[in-house]
Length: 144
Image 1: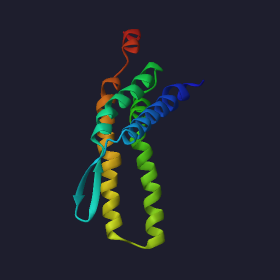
Image 2: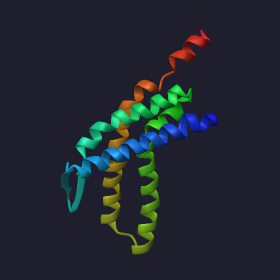
Image 3: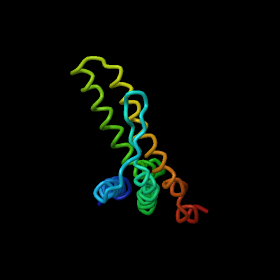
Image 4: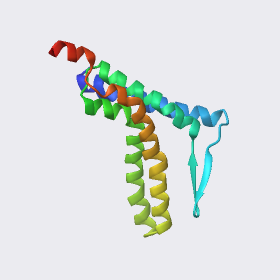
């Protein structure tokens, strides 16, 4: 297995898989999201799922650090679920606007969706990944 696979792709996939299974499990056992209305748009917050995201962010960054990956790779591995949602949303928005023409409500809904599914989970994942973004102790000892 090459260094990029061991240090980035495998930890990122484990993080993404864990976060996805966690959300699926919470939905399966019946934990419902909190729904807040912003104008005419409903925004849902999965508080139980958001509470587990720091664990998955930490897991991804830890596995990446253990593979002696660079700090950007550790950050990407820890934030992979939020990065995947960002990519998906950026692919869906232009396609949706091109089909139906410009719709301000859809643009507002996209902004709220971006906050709900990218920014807030990204902050939760970052909280877990932060302890693993510094220089690994094994590298610090070998350079001294």
